[in-house]
Image 1 (cartoon, each protein chain N blue to C red):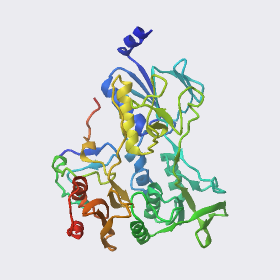
Image 2: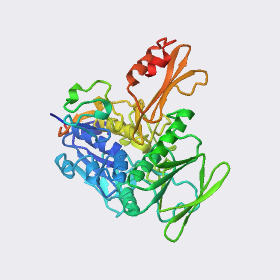
Image 3: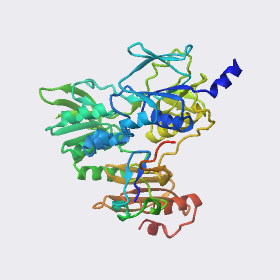
Image 4: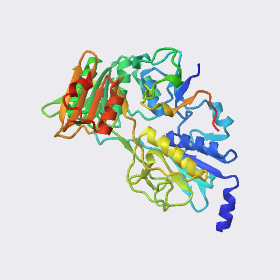
Length: 57
Length: 405
């Protein structure tokens, strides 16, 4: 499963780990996170995330 | 002349970006996305690769190493043909000849220039504030120096109880130090939380071993034999104590010496229009150094957005910046905090739920049956629902307390 990176703070969302502190079970794909899920580090909304390894341009 | 300029727009341009923080790096990325063949020089006076500055607190706590907070790996700049200058300070701008001048007198030509030099930590006028062992948290270098200094040490004082001060205190606490925070105002985070919440938060801090002296001022700092002396005065008493290290977190200042007297309009920052361009055509400013509609934001997220928009416009775009709304969710010493709407209206009625054991403090502010504001500390699960109630002005009479549980 693909990892996603917060473009604001650099936090990496790893689907294998999830975000259990905020009720997201391990194994949850980034695409399946609820719309109101935000970066647990800095509070950035989902649309501020990019796929890891996505090149510029 | 005009014809020549327009023609030149289609050719390869040389862009110089001064500063590789949030604004500088996001501008460089944006320009590269739009113009694959333009020359981009990104100049940093820091010695390390550009990094996520908000994550310095993780570096301070030892939860990350410096390589872990770099925005891109070293090879990325080469791959994207962005020439990154490290440990290079630009000391002058020759606007007439479109050149910047480095400290070693070498020069670099530009067609368009972005000034993204950021800010530096404010140093409050406390006698002895420059004493050895007094630090600020602004750069990787600062944090590495602090980490070196606190090895095998026991106590720290943080002057300033704003977000950065509290986070720094938390990081030092996690490294095992005894930490005291001195805050001038009687209530910490008064913009984000009400007075009762501020007192609640103080208890949360004390539970993790951070002592908070609010409503107190630091009178003086002095170097002792193997520690630093500090005199703190409150409303009724004055306390003298010692610490192994002192961190100062008292806001930011803007250095305008690079642009003063050059014909670039300044106030507290460099004045920019809605395209983030200064009054000199082809010279842009973004991030902490820029002043847009009278506002200097001093926020990482704002700097990222401004850098992106300046980048778009430098690359011949036409994007208007109208201001940045900060994210609703914050983290204070590891506790989630959301503030919604108006929490300062004295006429609104308050409904709350608190749980000291779980560090939960939730409060809604209701006026004429309508939720006008909310504070959610420790449990932000109701954020979206309450946000909607505020926006839609739903009447919640009789249901207030249920909204919180």
